[in-house]
Image (cartoon, rainbow, N blue to C red; front, side, top):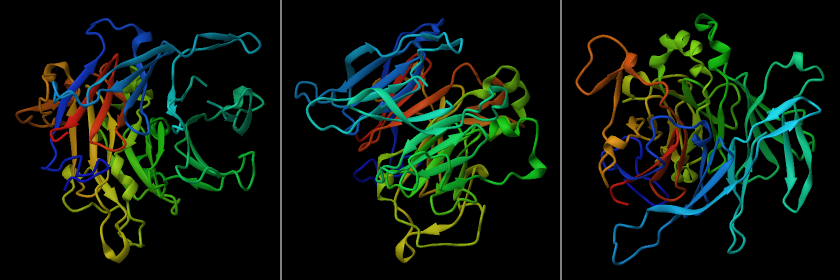
Length: 413
């Protein structure tokens, strides 16, 4: 089933086995806050991998070329460059501290032998920059109220469409996603589309607004879909349907009963990111959609998925596409959108022998715990995977766990 472009049932298919490749970072029990990795991003070719941390530093790793004397060295990433991107600042007019933490890194398309990337440390505005004009920018979204006491939401993520430079999307802490078209107005104070899933009144609680906050949004490579991450789930939206997502994948639903303690230790405010695998760019456009909204896909494990049934032209199902996101206990989750299977894997130095296979992990939410299962009460919430990245063309993934960067690949790589 494996194919070019990172295909091949990456989540739970029997033909793909993830294995350990590398781990970067010191083995320290007491990790300095400045050393915690805050973003991870592959370049468009996948030959470079950049990380940013809370101390404002950017580290770039370069992939080794094939060496006949070391036939298994290809795929290894070693440090290429390190630099300080941001310093802490203080806005004296607003009496506001601006931390140096790198929130996002984006690689620019390569036009020459040089490589360029953008890094940012600003959440109430979205600014558009000209790469050759560095002293000013054009504000395209501004949700800052005149009176900050009236502030009710902040911008949590933003991204431009991969093929239409005039279209961008941004998410908010209220769980909404707005799509803007700059052809209609340069100032995007009015959205073109508004995506929000209606809340079930019977399930509303004190924590509803907090856990519905969207922490990440990503367009699919094809540009037909977008993916959003909230505290408990990952959702896939069809850009032509604003009323509800076409897929919902539960990441750690077993934590719903723990929301009170997660609120007390502030973990409920953790911002998890998500990413697509490289092969979703070949996803077919939906030719039709059945009316089985919210039904469970056949073969779904533990009822962790729901979707709007859909197929491609001629009734063909879409080719293999997968998504990845993080969880606690240094677990990260993969969801195969074709087979509708999922897997939980762990980033751990205990399984860091070269090409050691990753063993699927399971969490026991209650009742009698089976062998090899982890009790939900024994999860370590100080160990968390917030940032992940998938190679654009191969089954190679990068996972940030506190100050360590883990790189995994499939056995065939």
